[in-house]
Length: 296
Image 1 (cartoon, helix red, strand yellow):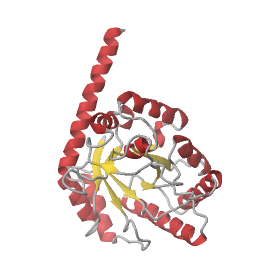
Image 2 (cartoon, one colour):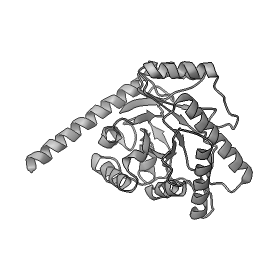
Image 3 (cartoon, helix red, strand yellow):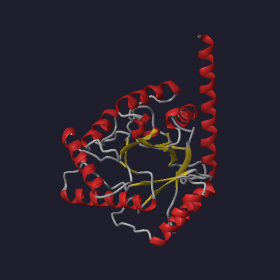
Image 4 (cartoon, helix red, strand yellow):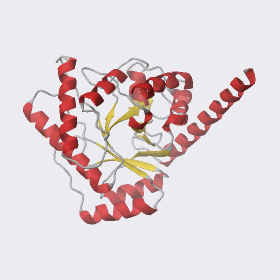
């Protein structure tokens, strides 16, 4: 598992890489532009080239881009749709340029519109942006389920991939805070295993491109997206360690978005905490396996 965090790109990509190294990350996630503005940021060729060189020989093995929060691929508004598709296409092209393993995007919100029509519009958008980019995967993130957000259930994620043409570049990013908030009881190993059995039987684990490891301030089924420091929320140590030690997540970038224990931005102490929780979860799984073997 590639343990990491979201890092700032203030000062450029090379600075973002430096921040990831300072925190002890194996993977980093970045915004390719201000997350709450439409104005695109074009990284300079020299910055991209140096960043790629650092990635080739350094300790950070994966970079993921998070698309801006303003994007709504489900909207009926023509101007909003135009901006959303342009921004998402730009993110994918920047992902191509820097060798990113994916662009994470929230599928969108249907507001008060019928779900089927809104899902169809997202599928159309997915096909369009993939046609305008070359390599980078598009990772649809599950949502906490507030309001009319799409992607709150596995069935909606399955449908979105199908409506997007089932393209091999369409993947999924699973966020454990959002999963708990949308009603998935993943507070222990067994609960998470049941969810992932469903995911794998419908999509196959190869569709999973990234995980977000965040604890939740809000309880199970609350539909509220409120992140908490690892182990200090409703998932607690057991839920976070279950997510970090799930065998099917091996080799994936596991991104902590915060808030960290020292403030809003994740720090080195949070990366250390992730590794401790992962070890705790692995130890617990080994004990369970040994006990099961002994019983049999």
